[in-house]
Image (cartoon, rainbow, N blue to C red; front, top):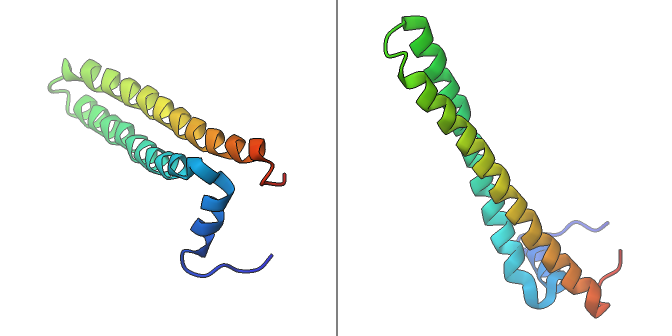
Length: 101
């Protein structure tokens, strides 16, 4: 396969997606947001461990734990939305017969 330079790969993707090329961009943005959101529960886990080790403010552990769960579920739902966007764009190219594979 030939190497693409610069933003040429985006031209190929845009041609592949046809009229739904903005869905690919939206999918990429949503995937990035999801990736950032998945990091926050690790910070909250660190805070929970720190509070438990110090033995002070134990009432806030439950709050941080539920926040971590909510952020994990939210990141998963956002990632699913990103996948749906990119798959809709891919399938639109298949319907036109422009794409192989």
